[in-house]
Image 1 (cartoon, rainbow, N blue to C red):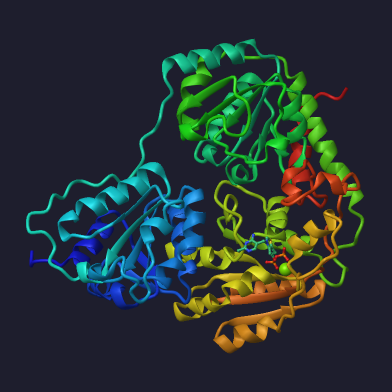
Image 2: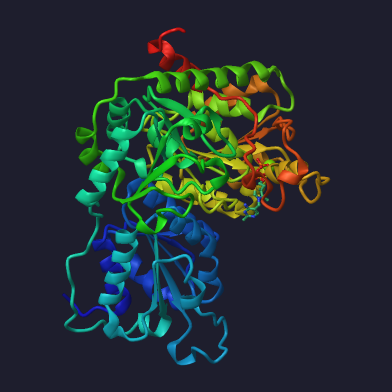
Length: 580
Ligand SMILES: Cc1ncc(C[n+]2csc(CCOP(=O)(O)OP(=O)(O)O)c2C)c(N)n1
Ligand SMILES: [Mg+2]
């Protein structure tokens, strides 16, 4: 092989690790790497308009494929723009390699043009964050970075001064087989024995599931059946666990519904499965709690634990299920299933507005129509804000659909960039960005990326001309709303002017047709739905002293609203429950 420079070697190694594309914006010190990408047949340069988009897109790609994705920013401000998207990817445990190109190595520490210190800046949002200051560090440094990102699940940042990027790569470099997938982590026999004994002793077991139950649907159901346990979930567990689940008692937390709260509080043993659910106000303090997590550092940081089990959920359950005694008493399970169905029934009855006629259009109506007409394997990306509420309540998971949001980091403007990353993994899959008007306009420049690459993403804009979620927070805290109104243009015209399909919807009866037409369109499309800013009813029990700062999350308040197709599911689960 002809002698390589550091950039060429860098790109080669990324390709060996399975990277298909690098998202970013070109510039100065990054140019040698981008040039190496240009000359490589197996990797594509994806030119975005803002580096934050690059990081969000790479994070979404990694969450869809489970394999390494990559992004890059030029020195100083270029890579600084990556940071928020990297925080999101890191906190979602998405394996992402970020290249932060850097000022010339001779000028570091001398106040040079565009000088920053990436190895300080990215410290908190990465497992590994190191600089290549000598070509001899290659390829080991990049290999180590990749293994951190994949092995520990999250972000690695490599910074590289532009002058190093063009230097010859080391002649006899140590290249080794890369780690490209994670092992299964099986808990020790002692932990399994202890857990087994606790379960056998307990009378009422409840499971509470998070994103760590991905890929473990069958194992969770088998275990729940064996010990007759109701199964609740956190938002990040919903897409993996709610479907085909005869033990479903709904979701806990601020956006929660159903009987998850009761089931987690009225059991005598609560088993937390792969969840880092942050709101400890929703977790009980007076029942025995076991937590199973692949990340030992997550164990016990949300609640007191009677047993901490370090292991994959799937692997742990595989070891555990055959060893626990079969429970025959369904009383607790049936009582919780009944409570769940009743709670949902109550919500639906309380929900009297005729949404199909309501103008401005009710956002819940938009979400329910979307759920009905979207493909069975659609990817939904969901903006932080009220779209989170609508997605949590109305999107029906089925094991094939995916729902990606900024559920741990909670950043606005995530949906469009994540949709870009999701769509690149498969141009034939339906990808729907549920965007807020605030979130969309924050990174609106990257709507042009859809047009530039003819990506068929469908942006469904919940346009309430307001920062709705914050307006709600202010209301709850007894503050007058302030700084929350958006003076918005006709976004459909903007979409059309950009070369995409664009339609504005102001009447409910236009909605379904407009969405269907947009979904049929082959290229990028935007449906600007003018929605009601006063969409949520707030439960009357909220008082101002319950709320300070991050008001909603600090309390046990659950927002009221519809529950979509969940009622049907809850009713069907009741079929086997004997009538009292
Ligand atoms: C980057 C960022 N800035 C600010 C916030 C605080 N915040 C959370 S939701 C929200 C409003 C979102 O407005 P929009 O996208 O229009 O959605 P809506 O709630 O109106 O549906 C704000 C300002 C945040 N989470 N992230
Ligand atoms: Mg809004």
